[in-house]
Every structure is written in C-alpha cells, then in structure tokens.
Image 1: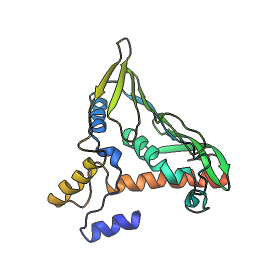
Image 2: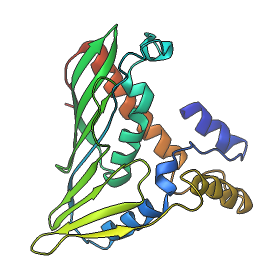
Image 3: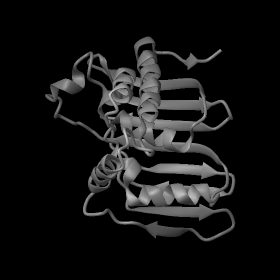
Image 4: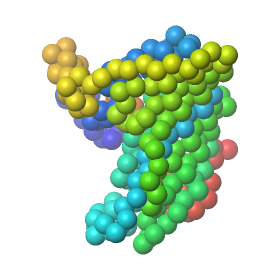
Length: 223
C-alpha cells in the first residue's frame, strides 16, 4: 500500500481502496452527528462481523496459510470502521484468537489508543452473530447494524428516549463509492478525502500488527 501511494503521487494518478462503508449515506449522516457532539466525546467503538461457515470448509482460500483466516476475509471492514471514528495513535493491540486448520477462525481484538479511547473488533467464521457496531460516548451511544452497510441507526442519549434515523442507499450499497471515484476524477484528484491513501496505509498497519499477534499468540504494545 505504501508503494501504491508513492506511485499514485509520483504519477499524479488516482487510487482509492474500495471501502464502500465510508461512502454510504447513513455513515455520512452518522459522522455528522458525531461531529455535532450528539453523544459527546467517543470513548469506545465496538463492531463485529461474524458468520458460521459450517460445513462449507471447501472454500480453500480461507484455510490457506498465507491468505486464509477471518482477519484477511472480513477484517478490513472492522478495522476501517474503527479507524474512521478514532484516529489517534494506537498504543496496544490484544487478540483472543481461535485457530482451526492453521488459520484464525475467530478474533476478538482490543485496540487501545494514546488518548485512552478503546476499540473492540470481533470477526469470526465459526459463529454467527448480529453485525452490530456500538459507538459509546460521554453523553450516550449509537448502534448500527449491519455496520458495514447500514441504512439506519439507533441514537441513545443519556436521560432521553432512544430514536431511530434512516438513510437508504442511493440505488444500492456500491453506488456511493462509485460516485466518489467519478467525482474525484472529475475534480482531478489523486485520492479521496473519505478514503485517502494514508487511510489505507493505517488500516494495513493495524492489520499487520494483528497478523503478527496471530502468529505469536500474545500482546502487541508500544513501549
């Protein structure tokens, strides 16, 4: 990704990782609510993307040593969503990991940031769970499901009745990211403000730290 970013800049050529979640109307509305302080200062973000592969274990790439495992399958959604809401320096990463056939089939990742904010990412192919994201702040929380392609959220402010906000897709859940690419090209940009070259680098840096923990089976911490 660092090589791609360098190439894009040197050649004045557009590149954007296709992270559809960041461009959905509901996520744009959610980000605006957070910027307005609707739930105060974010203290924790939790999300999960868990399914049960069951007997369909002939999907060979999922169990190949290099490219297999649940982190490489759906983890990019978990990580990119977390880093969309908390952008501070990561000081520690922990992973309660379950292995099967030599790859990670269930990860429970805790990320701690320099300012004390935390994230919890759960991804699995051995257990099905609701794909829920909860953003907790000093004044309340916001729930969102499925977090990687939502059309509605539930806002819960302390001392107030919860309410729901709905924002349907524009055509489908891929349209918004395609439109972003078109808008960037028409504007002569080489990257998107919502999913920049550096954003993709940061997601991969977190992925590398989690992969290293999967290999070692312990905690990663910045001293």
